Amino acid sequence: MPVSVEKMQEWCAKLIEKSPDFPALEECLKKIPQLESLADLPAGTRVLVRGDTDVVFDDKGEPDDDSRLRALVDTLKLGVSKGWVQVLYGHRGRDPKLSLEPVAAYLQDLLTGAGVKCGEIKVVSDWMNDETGEILDVARDAVAKLPNGSVILLENTRKYKLEQALWKAKPADLPAIAPKLAAYANGMRDKIGKVHVNEGFAASNRDLSSTVVPLTMDRLALGAYIDKEMRTHLQKTRLAELVVFSGMKLEKLDDLQGILNRGQVKVVIAAGLLALALKKADADLAGTPFEMGVAGSDKDCKIYISPERIEQAKTMLTKARAKGVEFVPPIDFIMGDGKPSDTIPAGGAQFDVGPKTIALHAAKIDEFIRYHQQKMAAGKGPAVAFHNGVFGMFEKEEFAVATRTFMDQLKKMTDAGLLVYVGGGEGGAALHKYGDESWVTHCFTAGGTILKALGTEPIPYIKALYLAAK
Image (cartoon, rainbow, N blue to C red; front, side, top):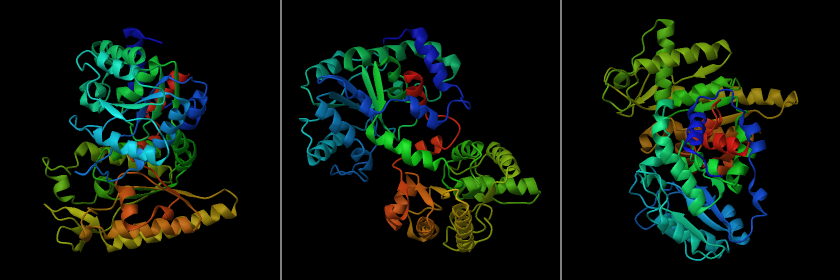
């Protein structure tokens, strides 16, 4: 139903507040309707579909990876068969100038190949007033005139700054933006559709399209693909006792902290900036020196690790070790000249982990396989491992050795009967480059979503759908 500005402000306060005691993912999924629950909707129903449209295309209109678009097919196919008019919307990266035109063309081909006849998929280029949140009449008219069984796209949601209004919002900001958000959500209901399906598996930020719109909807559901990912693979991934964690973004310290807070993990294999922060924190706790090179000295460098992050890592190590968690950081590094070193010199930088670390990884995987065998012998089911990220600058072959080698370790665990899950992004790209998806139990199409799901804070769109359904 339409909502007041006051109701919108209350809703947004719930969305942005920290919620460590929020129901677990498993409990949320029991409340959120599945796509099949919408089977009674009559032909002609306007259905909003929040999709994963964040795909990179080359100059010829070919995607570098079409898995996210293929994931939309089953939901769209069902909607077409029911005669719904489906209004798909989503984003492409963070560049507001990127268009969904190539998404429309590629989806057209995918649906045609799947035997789906939905007519030409067009893109509504302008559909919202970014200053007020009002949905434009031109968008309403474009949707209203479509025949049953049609699919149409609203242009890149991040064309509008308002889409990201809740990303960094604080409670004090809400009174100023709530009127715009109410206008947006009410306008989507009144002019576009009153049913919301979320098929945006990777869209795990607090985008308005996936967190505010559900508030005003009459009906909502998870899409076919996201529902399967959540209820099967993701729930099993949350049982991971070994996590392989790497990357250049220090925000992953926050993700790792959230994962450790759940108390499931026993072993953490770390690399990248995350590992440097952990190694420096460990050295400080032990009263021994550790040089991080430019990562510890050049504040203008993109790989700089601040003292605050080191303190965060100290706290993480202390608390996790008290609970028996083992951390496995690198013990040697590949420098810019391609040579291994046990240390990082002042002014230097690591580009991969070295041969000693590769051997250490192999030994730790063997230990975890033995742990798995003990679990199986005790009738406690298979052990679970989660791999995220890469170990170095794997885009260059001279710095890809550790990443390439570790793909064999993933296969080794899978062959031993473990459940092995790989996050999207670089980890998935490395698997496709140096191995095969058959080497693991499942490879996700999203990295950030998985990291959020493994922690204690709910994924924003799951939080929104749960609250709306409840």
